[in-house]
Image 1 (tube, one colour):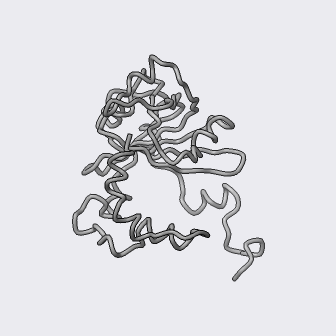
Image 2 (cartoon, helix red, strand yellow):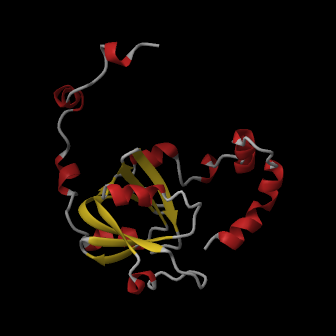
Image 3 (tube, helix red, strand yellow):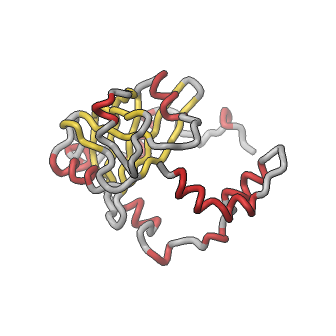
Length: 210
């Protein structure tokens, strides 16, 4: 293995990077705004899935969030609200936000090639009036992530087109990768029945989704 510190091909400064790629196309710059216009708001309102990137004292994190389309509320042109649903209580994203408010969001819409990116600063609120805006199956989130928009822009279709993400023929058979039960059994330092976990997971998820 070549040591990174002695890699003569490593790109380590902006001038070298820009020499490789050249200048950004003007259209790539004009699509960036510091507020949510009606076009960008439509993407958020139709998205059932967003990935949240955050940064904290122990490093970075990237976490998915999903609910019926429109679950992320646009409070105003500079603010979006994301309910924090029941999870595994690692709360990595929330821990990071408490320490460092910088976040990035990536919205996806099934069947749509473009994605929407938001960079901004977040905080966590347990204000009852905000939490009560997000009921699901009779249950409320424990908190709401409030993201203040710094920049927002759409990403073109190339990445999703290359991945064929929304094409049926690109779907991978379930047995092509290890199941959650198999992974946990392999990594557990105590006896764990992965097959039983997998058999019961659909019912477990139904009971614990919210």
